[in-house]
Image 1: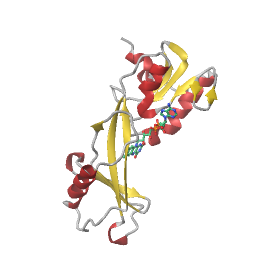
Image 2: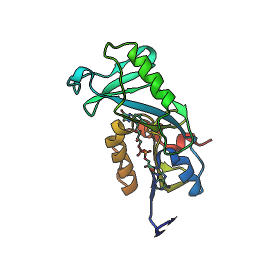
Image 3: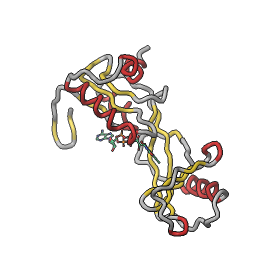
Image 4: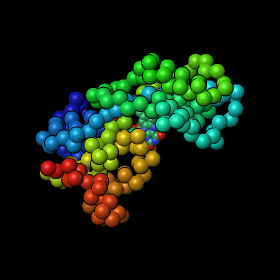
Length: 189
Ligand SMILES: Cc1cc2nc3c(=O)[nH]c(=O)nc-3n(C[C@H](O)[C@H](O)[C@H](O)COP(=O)(O)OP(=O)(O)OC[C@H]3O[C@@H](n4cnc5c(N)ncnc54)[C@H](O)[C@@H]3O)c2cc1C
């Protein structure tokens, strides 16, 4: 691999490039999975009425048209949007934040003033919306670890163990059915 800081060689490469996963595969001469990054944005509000919200449940509007949940002592509010995007350093669009806060405001008594922070990121899904974990069928030295969608934090302990086992040659601690549902081989024509 040639990088800006020199050349490197390794027996295995783990492709954990998130939204850029398909681009990295193509650099390695391998076919794309067909990943789609979707932008989702979030605004953080101070805790309503200064309450201790840490133990509050996640709140959903009807049809998941918005959600709010405790974060860093306040509440994050999102439109729960899935806007397709090329791989990029995504940013929150004002219209998405405004729409999310307007929908949230319709259901709560505390007036929304100004967000204390806002951000957006890309939730990247495979065509079947399952994670893609395991060696490429065309070249087992290239190990996919992508397609976490909106669940990359929740799934990280199990997914990283599976990928680590794959790379060092240990037998993964999952049934053949589960491994098949996660395997990049499922996208072979
Ligand atoms: C608003 C929002 C809310 C979310 N909420 C949750 C949640 O509650 N729970 C949950 O589990 N998940 C949540 N997620 C999803 C979670 O953020 C992702 O699933 C997770 O970040 C994916 O991790 P990753 O390491 O695979 O990819 P990324 O976090 O995208 O990391 C990939 C990294 O690879 C780098 N990279 C790419 N190409 C190259 C290259 N050529 N050279 C070097 N570096 C490269 C990128 O810069 C990036 O840092 C949320 C996402 C968003 C946007």
